Length: 175
Image (tube, rainbow, N blue to C red):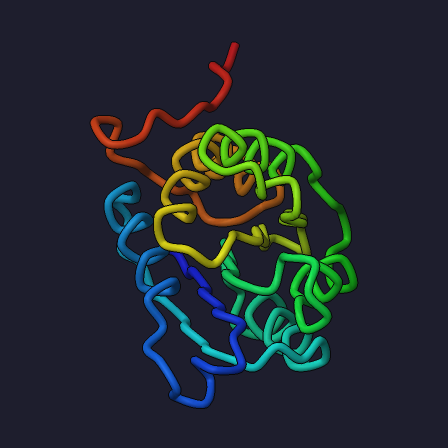
């Protein structure tokens, strides 16, 4: 069993103005990749840095999520503060995740350079910021997820098994 947190940061979705399809897109991708039993922890919250930080801390420190994936709040708008919240709670930043996601997204839209996605670790939790559009979520998860299980191994999280017909993960061969 692995614990996965999904956080959608959206003022409008948190008020019920529209349905959160981005969080559901994350769950759908992960369900297609991971073969373990999964306990999901799902929150739709407002774009407030303190609320985002509190939710990240709760999922990492109290619940013990192996993976926490956020969607929304990574652009340049004033209310986009998910990146700042992530940077504040992480102990180690893993800039390669954001670099790869932006590079991939640039193949589809020139505005990908405006994205501030990042990733980092807190304890045995890996936190990844994703964009807010379901199509972009899938494109980004497809390219970064091969490194996710091994990263979680390295930080002491639970062992993640994946369906190799859906996603080719990488773990170095032991000697």
